[in-house]
Length: 295
Ligand SMILES: [Zn+2]
Image (tube, rainbow, N blue to C red; front, side, top):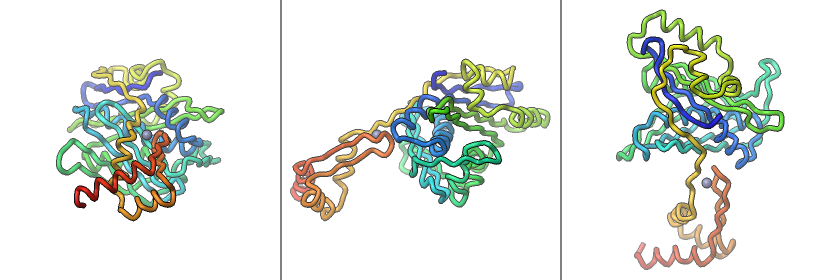
């Protein structure tokens, strides 16, 4: 199934549904960062939730940045997603492989930790980006995003995100589902949604079994009306120029150390792991430019 985000309404227009298939983008992240299963599941869940959020953006240049840190061994998890459907993410420790014998599932909560926060930043090109933060609920990601939506949008929300890892550690399927109730939703609709969410198979299983994201949504809510489709994809967007700019704001002493001790600089993009090297001359040019500008 191709990576795509869809939006729909169902139950007589009383709920809004967003669903996303993210199998290919999570597999890209796995290959680039050499992710082990639990790290892959944690990052893939965050990327899936971020992809859903980005699919609701109206402007191409608007951008969500999600930052999660539960003080567990996984460290910080970052994901960025924009209005073009470009998504990238990375996880502090890519090599976590925890399995929970009791649940028979990858132990994402243990890897992420529960003592921390989920922070969402929305950059719409305004002076101040919007920022919202919630304490982590379980570190399992889905619960944590649900808490965020309830707090920030004050809308009752159900969210499922999941990654299914194959025997060879590749990503068999990944995706997410977000259900939001419209204001004044009748009680029987709330019960229907609760029952559907409780009884549904894991979202990653549905993404594997079905032929399209439309089919996944229709299998859960047969009266769903699909409103839109939007491509989503892994895209890092890093560049040599970007990292050269980041070198240009370093302290003079640090640049001099790089010139005299390392004879250049090497920067590895933490998202796509592309390596950029900068020569001694390029670093000198930064210092010279600074001096001629009188800084
Ligand atoms: Zn990159």
